[in-house]
Image 1 (tube, rainbow, N blue to C red):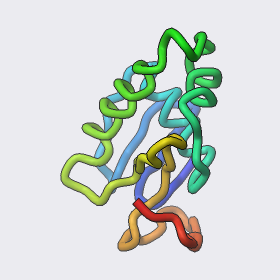
Image 2 (cartoon, rainbow, N blue to C red):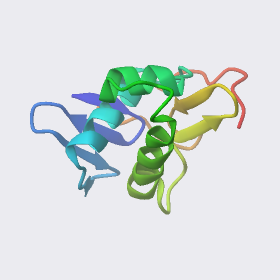
Image 3 (cartoon, helix red, strand yellow):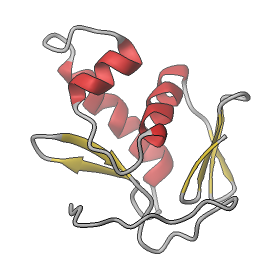
Length: 116
């Protein structure tokens, strides 16, 4: 099980919950979310995401990452504090919001100088 803030990912059951609410994910959305959650607070480039989630040629499929990031944002960030942050020219960062209370015994890490 992977926990970041109030988002829980059960890798065995291939299910996710945020704030106790179940989130329906496609297989690709699940893989993308798992990669993001396993690398919290780390800037992940589009190339890294494409290689890890799709194993596609970066040049031909760069919009694929943006498309699936937008799908995930609608599902996990809608009406809540954002967890998926864009770093212009660098990639994406996944982190819990400032007001999130850690779930399942997880500890809240320092956000440092990371800004939106």
